[in-house]
Image (cartoon, helix red, strand yellow):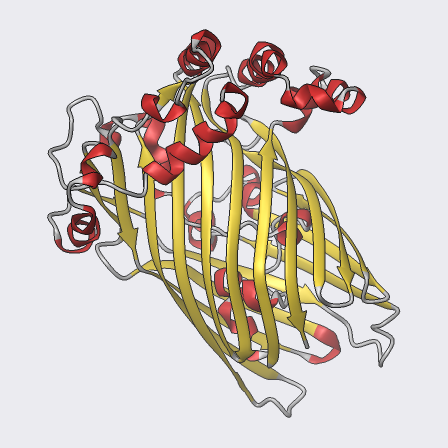
Length: 433
């Protein structure tokens, strides 16, 4: 039983966070007043795209099939038929510090059986990772995305879910203070794009997408305490017992995204995107729940309370206006051999003009490029706020799509404050024409 504890802790924490009933908020679970919950309260839901991540986060003016629902719905104006069922992405953070520099990755490669050795997992691997996460501030352990979707003509629909394991260490804290916050997002999104003057050299795409998003997160737990519990428990230990009584928060939001693309000769596109236009109370509407256990008494009351019950807290998430430039040249029928794409984005233009500086501009600048060979092999690279990103993809018979990307994120308050690297592996079964 203990050999599966690490897997079960993730699954049970996050699944448990989806269910609860209306109870008075406990005094020790006050997310609006505690810094460690800032990221999970109001951060916008973003589907993980291995392609965009590898291209430095740029892609507003690039066609992204069904993923355009979350990036730029105006790109749906280009007609097409896409079935993307399913798509799964796994992201691990702190790859270099936690797995490479500590020698953990080399050890697992040399001895693959060590990954199933409970003594190694709890005695070396996890403590090594936790030690890397001991620096103060926000960080992440992992993200898992799973979803289904399709695009028919200019209409697209998708249902996507995402699990995040967030971490937080108080200022001047250390490894012993590391807190883990499980978070679950579920989003149902639909969008449509329309192309005007489609027979002209210049044409315009206009698109809009709307989503119903639900988010749940659990009260943080101390990573070292949980690890000690695993080490000291017997073989019949049930990891769920540590978490089913913990308080949770569950909320919902209805964001809108609007896009406008200006398509020009020679494959140039200028994109304008206004995202995160919140239609209800300006953000996520949360209720705070006592525990998972109470779900057993009134399972239907959960959803009734979330949508019609009193709102305990609204986490406002302001809209964001971004611009993008893309170039996908028409090579006169030679795209089967080589198909290049260049993308440059400036995110949150309003925020940039409110704080004009070189640092502010660089933190919002995303630059990327992609080369596709024989409609089979994709090579990508870019700069995300000055951080390098790399990636590759393989498209097998236009049915199976495998992608990988390695990139850096900024988790600090300023550029260069806390850079965290990440590795994303994404798998799609799709059909596209």
